[in-house]
Length: 116
Length: 115
View (tube, rainbow over the protein chains, first blue to last red):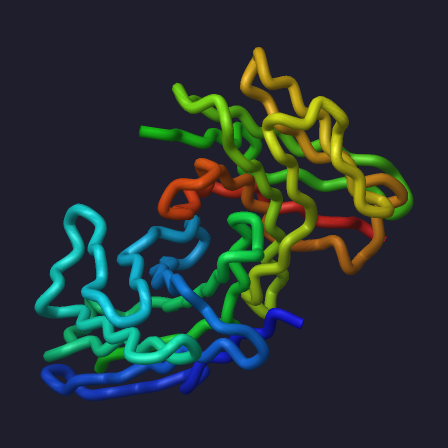
């Protein structure tokens, strides 16, 4: 159980375009979803926390107008990178948790974004 | 604010041997969870083991066990009978119980199992 999917797994886009990444909890209702960014050979950095039906809470230094997060249902959260630039190229990972998971987060497989 | 420190950027060990990965953390909270996550080359994060701070007994999961020293704020992971599939990045992580469930990760230890 506790499977989280992400789509797409890999995306290449041109500078200035927007890219949407989907995160879905397949077999449970995710009350909270998290978005992380991971640079090569580095740890995961939390970007934002989102609760279903409410606005996301962004970490310090993360531009909320650039990284739009929507958590419209208990099984889906989306991250939109607006006006992407090469420095936004990274590995983006989502995770999800529910009330019964004892603070455990279930991670998606990640999305590799390359901005040309 | 919580911090998690992993002082070993890289480690390697022969297959079938035992290896211990170190993790220390700093917090003023008394009720929290600690985790070890594994990230293999596929980059999928996999939970290895979880420890609840209010439990004195060290958690174990098959070949994986922890040495949880609450007073010292230490949470090391021992992998016994290491296997080639254990090759991965290992991240220690902390979260406050009953909080907003944010995970604070350490910088990771890259473990290589040598055949």
